[in-house]
Image 1 (cartoon, rainbow, N blue to C red):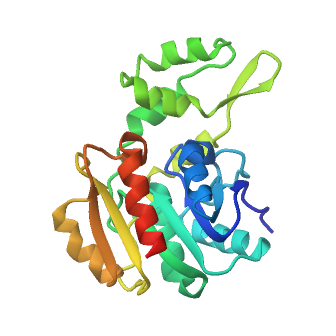
Image 2 (cartoon, rainbow, N blue to C red):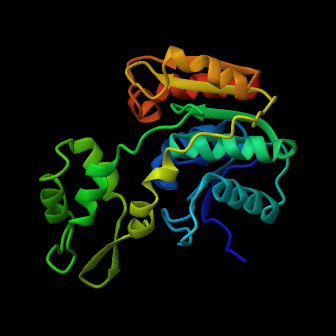
Length: 257
């Protein structure tokens, strides 16, 4: 039996479960989570398996990730949950909604469609795998080395949140890099053509992101007939970080409607 996913729980009220994206963790959502909690929600910032402080396991696909969430909900005796997922977390959220619709009150999907995405994180995985923590003894040195493979400062800062001191003077990754490196194909998987969730759903796409295009609307509505599809202005794929005010306003309006 798998252990229960690690989470940070804020506030009280109707449960809002937030799922991070690939190589992310619950801490990425702390600022927004605090805002949701102030609106009378019990916010569960969750680490998915092989990420953050949750358990490591060889199995990794969206059916399994959705099942992890079901076990988490059962463990905490939650009802009528709202699930918000970004990117990979959005795929988990969609699969959960299709598999366990009776547990869900509302679904929010941030910048991902239910379609197949070819593996496109390879340069990131390659860079992370090149970090040798027998030689690298500080976060600054890790950033400098990672810069040889990943020029974008913001992406490096996001990735380096995975670092922690495994023992005195020894850095390591919290995420299970070995399994995630081997499961790149799974990350991009589409939902089954037959899967459908008929509950209230909000899809948010970043104005500058290519993850959801107008051509995807038909696929989205086939899987989620009651979905609203809205845009977050001046934002790419990290829409919740790039325009947090508009992201928050659109999501809280949907939650409270």
